[in-house]
Length: 490
Image (cartoon, rainbow, N blue to C red; front, side, top):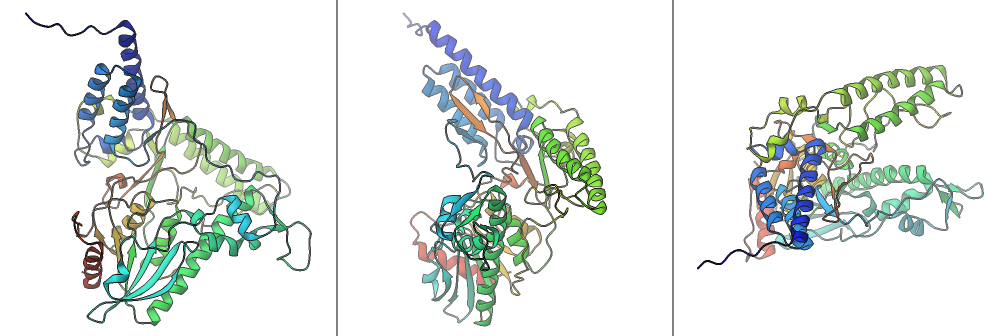
């Protein structure tokens, strides 16, 4: 006598169908707009998409509750292994910056705090590097965003240590407070520019960010110059546990390197959302070109930029996307040519921060047309060898920073392979992928950065010198091994 399997109720069977519909929706949306899909489907990645998809389908077929269905979808997302591809409940919302209405502040500290600049644990190295020799602190506090010092090894060699806790400008509190007066406007005009109270609108917030980053890098340049004068000839940059952040990672890498870095190849998802973004940009340029308050030269420059961007817009959004459903059934070799031919990602004239690189970019009507770097800083130009420490928790902009220097042979990378998050978001509005039955939304990145060898930065960074920490190893001993490798160099 055999026991028959229990029959699934009609309600459960109906739920199963809807859960599988969610899976089909997710797969179709990833095929349409996930820029790292072809890389994740390649043999060169560490991901087996067909196995993940099959496991998710089996789990949904066996699921009896919404929680089990959610876990099946989450396992697929987690298995893809992209830090910028994640589930959200759709209820979280970022704090909005001040609107164009005037927001009045009585002092710089309250202004920066209100806008979103907060202290983080930026005054601690990710490992106890101070314990690896005689240590001398140059500068370090949570509000500074950086920690700089010098460690003198047992052999007498001096190594400068730079901790970068994150690439989030919102952590650079001290520089924000020092910059606020420069970009804000006094409520009552007076002879002294520091007159309070002062106000700051949305455009002011954007200028404040750039000024804050530039000021922080200027302070860092001063700190490292001091380290050099005190005898440090090698620089070890600590990126351990750095969660990433913003595009100024490129500016800092370029500023530190002794050589010019090639602008990385950056592409963005070529869908209707990109088309709307480019449409807004072309409209802004057209408005400036037609505004008689601008000079003739300004209007001509705006018109030329408008025509160039319009051509980019047509090229980027008119190609027919290739069919990608095969990624859930088989793996193929990575091909950069196939990646660009597929029509899902457009290679636009963007810099590493996602800013459009045209001859000129329009400002507000009635003002001069100008093109400026997002962050305008002088080169730090560290004169000695550079080493960068990374671990499995160095992600996103931290990985890009290390990759920029590694690709230019401007630094050796030491430590563990990074997790692999690659490029995240260049900033234009994108809608999440909605999975109604699971009650969740999926956020997907909108950009790709390719490495010098043609690989996707989402593969993470492989160190030039691999040093792993065993579970039981004393952190100070591990830090000493990192410093020893940095001291030896190549």
